Image 1 (spheres, rainbow, N blue to C red):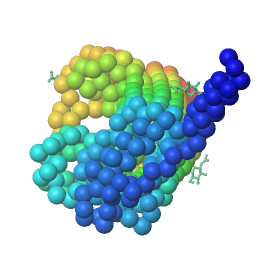
Image 2 (cartoon, protein in one colour):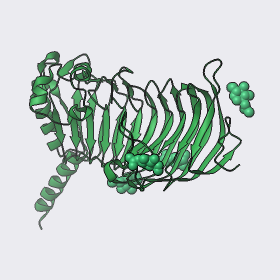
Image 3 (tube, rainbow, N blue to C red):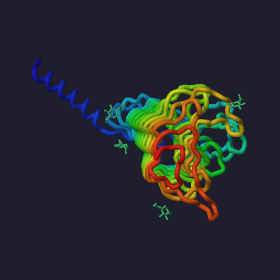
Length: 395
Ligand SMILES: *[C@@H]1O[C@H](CO)[C@@H](O)[C@H](O)[C@H]1NC(C)=O
Ligand SMILES: *[C@@H]1O[C@H](CO)[C@@H](O)[C@H](O)[C@H]1NC(C)=O
Ligand SMILES: *[C@@H]1O[C@H](CO)[C@@H](O)[C@H](O)[C@H]1NC(C)=O
Ligand SMILES: *[C@@H]1O[C@H](CO)[C@@H](O)[C@H](O)[C@H]1NC(C)=O
């Protein structure tokens, strides 16, 4: 090669290199978004997404500017994207349509979906408003109401700083993802809104959730089948139904959940605290689960293993199989209970719960004249001096 040729090759390589390290920023306002809270901005968001996701720069920023309110119909942000790092910078507000008729005739299970986007960061001080009130009123069946924000098959996902309110169903779902960090979220819906879970996780590995405030009408966080290595720290939960593993094993399904650590969390006025719930007739396991350093402020059912979880108001059918619950450690629970059974271990006759360990439990009555105790069937393990004592476990 002559020197001129070498020079040309080097130049091309430098341009490619420069392109792969530079960052591209695209703003929804540059793609025709209006941001008045009334105009449908879905198409502008889709076009902005095409630009961000199709960019081969080292990182791409999708900007949702502050001070604007964007009305979006159900929208999917589909990957895979060319850039290995995509930042959905959310400083503005995104609201769902208040008129559900359009939505119901083009039914999708999730309002805003991110699918197959690796290295996605969704952050900022922005707000997602699911406008759920109309759904709670008109659509009692939660299976016909959409989740607000869904992440599916997104590896190396980070979600932080945002506020999520009034989802029609659960606020956030994380499915089939690996390496996820969720931090500093505020999730709020009325206590009376049914099935408005904060965060639902399924089939995901290596998930860290920390420093979130979650108060809704259902579980603050639910950990479903296929989850392992989930750490939850510093979550203030209430009102709501607590932090739950499950429900697992519905309709005879196989469920597997393991290596779950919930620590340094507070349950205030919640219907449950630390809960594991499984359906009769399922199979599989829920094991190696730790709940520790938990503060209770007038929580109902602070510690609850329920192997007889069934549809509310319907009796459980007799079944011999159950999801096996074992190696569960409740360590360091203090505060007040509003139900008489502060510790409730309701395990199946045929399968039972094994290696259930209770340490440093001191749960007292949340109301005057109330006496707290425990209830325990078919649970095996050790109780080292809990207040209240748990009789069926060995000392
Ligand atoms: C998850 O993170 C670990 C450690 O940073 C890394 O080795 C692994 O490849 C990541 N997994 C995926 C699916 O990206
Ligand atoms: C998850 O929690 C466990 C138990 O506290 C801890 O040993 C582990 O380091 C945590 N993992 C991460 C990635 O923070
Ligand atoms: C379930 O089992 C209990 C006790 O073994 C029995 O009394 C009850 O009738 C059974 N219920 C059904 C629906 O089979
Ligand atoms: C249990 O908690 C109550 C209320 O905070 C407290 O008065 C009591 O001393 C505690 N008991 C033990 C053994 O720590």
